[in-house]
Amino acid sequence: MKRVCVMCGSSEGRDPEYVLGAQALGRCLAERGIGIVFGGGGVGLMGALADAACAAGGEVIGVITPDLRDLAGHKTVQLETVDTIHQRKARFAALSDAYIALPGGFGTLEELFEAVTWNQLAIFDKPVGLLNVAGYFDTLLRYLRFVQNEGFVRHEHVDAIIVEDDAGRLVDALKQHRPVRLGKWL
Image (cartoon, rainbow, N blue to C red; front, side):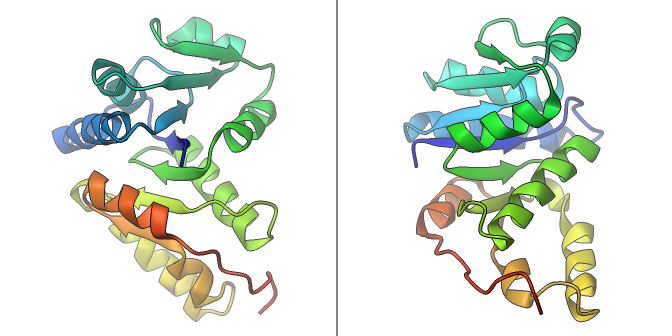
């Protein structure tokens, strides 16, 4: 793995553990020589992730639209400006070998589910992980099992999402990931 796309909130959230988790992931990736591709924000978990990675000597590439750059763009990392969110996500895919989601809102979840769906449809084959800081994704994981039990996704596709509460274990698991090739249809 050369680079990981990290999807996370532009807010810090309510639990201080979220910031600590973002910082731990940034340091972990930098210390292992794995670059970060992210949304380019200098605030919230995005800023905490990028600042920690930079402080540890890591490569950090932000991909951002002009309006977001002007509003909250990170001031010290390499920023690549694209015109649209669709172009942003295409650059995430082009620059990254894997995906990790930290706590975040609609944008984080949308990017997470796009990556999972693209794996399911064999558009690409990149491991997807959740850094489950302070149990943030527990409710989502229960919901995904519900969706599976209702017959809308295969358990293999749900199981392919790697979940850890420790950054180092998550990165190790992403490196060991083997693709699921079942096709979309149940």
